[in-house]
Structures are given as structure tokens and as C-alpha cells.
Length: 446
Image (tube, rainbow, N blue to C red):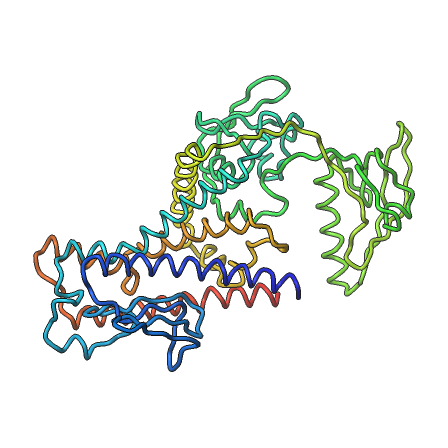
């Protein structure tokens, strides 16, 4: 329960900040061009609002709605999510959106996306300035990588050190590295001191991301690093420095394989409605092998850790002015990666993988960590900017599309057309929202 509350609080705080900045972008450009803004709301307020306030001599009502699905900025003389068609039947007024030149209206519509992207770049810059960047370079992972069966069929071998993909150096283990490998034509690895080229078949990043065990993971030696008193390993007599050899008769050569076997054990036990598991383990100590029975606890843990390696850590620190170009590059690369992955959304598997608020909340850490919080907020700001600029009616990108048409064709789409387009867009977005959160519910249940 505590974990849920911590994640929920982080999610609400992050989304509230992003909504304020996004709608603030529309508000800024609207006021810059003397367009009246009637409402500025965090969250939606059908029927009633939790809080509202209208300053004296101001045209704008500020408030907080009760439906946490975003927010809105109601601009006079515009068909938006408020669907205020009565206002559009009246003669245009000089302070209305529809009375302004197309170029000004275009800036008002892209203002939210622009501010979200700028916010992401600023957050990334401040993260680098405050905490710097620490990682273990792939070239320094001298034990190499661990690969699953599909990767081995392609040509990878356990212990390969990843060097490059299509000539581009692979520097660190992260999502960008996985993407580079999966979408490459050729991957270069260091094997037994020699460079080897591996030709890559056509793969789906979505399929690879869902594999268990992972397509590629950091190789962890099969050596016990620490044993907690009272746990399954301690009761079986396993000690620090012991090497694991076999699990229920299956040979294991890494801590990765031990964890895979533990996961299978747990799944099988849960199918049989067992509350714990038991297995036989062959281990080696000072060259002598022994076999013991190991009992897990109710969480299917043996309370031991292993596979740890003291790799060299690369630390990069940034001065205040140095952090901005680095933050900009990080933001641009994040946007490129996300835009690249969008093509998988339009597949059957991609549709199943869509997630709603539960999925978004799960990316936040279980304990409050400001660095991780700001990293996730910057990432969500990138997502919000990208999704909003898509040319879908009811999104900013839909309005931009119609404005570009007006600039090129030199005539506006009719108000009736805009009204129907807004309704269709809102229906599509509502259906997508229901589907994404339905996926979350199904994943929770099953």
C-alpha cells in the first residue's frame, strides 16, 4: 500500500506539472496576441470543480477539476474540448482566436508542445548539472554479455563484448543499445580478443523487449557474493565465494541462469498453489562439489546475492553552462527513440502493450528518489509533446493540420467541419484511453 501511494503521488505531481506547463504554453501565446482566455484548468471539471478562482478585472477563471485526465485552456472563439458552439454562432470579436491571423493561431496551438519540449530539455540539463552521469561502459564489461537462445541462434555467444552496431559505437547498456542492436544490419563484438561481425536478421523491437530471459543482459558470474542469515542458502550451508553448478539437474554457468531457474520454480509452484519452493543445488567450493536441498521462503527467495563484479564506473560531471548542450542532446535522442518506437503501436502486439495510468505510475520508483522522479517527468514531457503534435483532431496536431491547410488553401475549414472533427477526435482519444487502461486491468488480474 505504501508503494502504491508513493508511486501515485509521484504520478499526480508529475502530470500536474506537465499539464500546467503545456496549458501555460497555449495561455502565453494567446495572451501575447491579446486573445481572451476564459478558463485555465488543471484536470477536467464536468458538472463541478474542486477549486476555482477568477481574479478581479481578469477574463480568466483558474481552477482544479475533479477528473484527472489532463487539463485545458479555454480560448475564446475556438472549437475545442469545451464544444462551446453557441459562442461560434455570434459575430467574431477582435479578442477571439478566430479573428487573429493564421500565423498567430498556429503559434497558440503549438505553444503547449513547445513548452513541454523545452521543459524536458531543461530538466535533463539540470539532472546532468546536479547529479552528473555515471555508467559502466560496455567496453569495460570484461565478462561480456549474456544472451538468450534466439540471440545465440543469430550468432551471439555468452561473454561477447558489444562494440558497435552498423559502425556506431555502443557505449552503455540501456534501451537505446537494445534498439541499435535489433535494428542494425551488422553488430560487431569482441570475442576471445578478436572482433567478430554478426549479421542481424529482421527483428521486432517489441517482440525482443517482451522476451524472458532477455535477448541480451549483463553477464553475471555464477559466484555467491553474500548470504543472509536464516535464508534458504544459509540453511543449506552455501557460503560466500561458492560457485553454482547445477539447479535441479540443469547445468548453470551464470547467476543469470540461476535467476531464470528461480523464476521458473516460482511459476510452477504458483500453478500448483504452493506457497514456497524447493530445489536441489550443486555447488563448488575450493574445487570440491556438493549437492544440497534448498528451501525458499514465502516470497520464493533464498536471501542471497551473487554475480556482482567490480567494474570500472565512468563518471561525467557537468558545469552549469556545459549541462545545457548535453541536456539538449539527451532530450533529442530520447525523442528520436520514442518516435522510432511508435511504429510498433500500430501492430497487434503493440496495441496489447499499450498501458494507461497504471503503466505510467509503475515507471516511477517504489521509494521517493528525486533524480528518478525528474528523469521520468522529463521523459513524460517528451511523450506528451510528441503525442499532442500528432495530426489527430482534438489534439494540438489536429488544429495545426487544419491551420496549415488554411495557410496553403487560403480558406478556413467550416465551423461545422471543425465541430465534427473535434467530436471524432475526442471519441478516438476516449476509446484509446479506455483500451489502454483496460490493458492495465487485464495485466493486473492475470
